[in-house]
Image 1 (cartoon, helix red, strand yellow):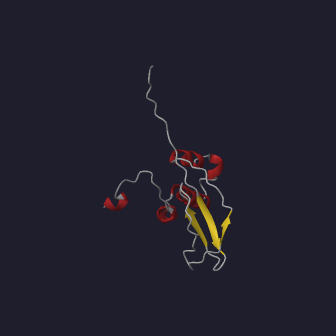
Image 2: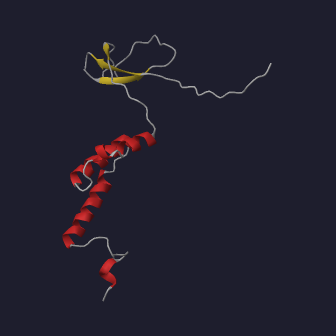
Image 3: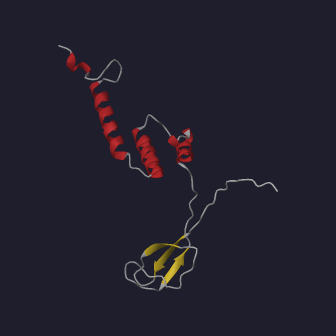
Length: 134
């Protein structure tokens, strides 16, 4: 008898259920394990046990490459010359990746607006710019 070594990917799924406390109306989530527990659920705010399970939206797991590919779709980006469109896109990209890039983007945008107001651009400018000239 010939034995083969095979590697299988095992995915353990532990659902997260959302509940609403009927006493204080707070929504909360509970990670449900494989072994059922007999303890009644308690609201983290008021400790009440009168809770209702809610029907939640589900999330599709995507890796970072899929997220970036989806975000770089030209139809989703919009007009790259419009600062408002780009700010919205950067904010959405940050949300998808779990980061907040809006502060950095606002700084870059303000810098570009200053350059445009001065009538300058990046062409021909090096580090230090025209400050080195007599």
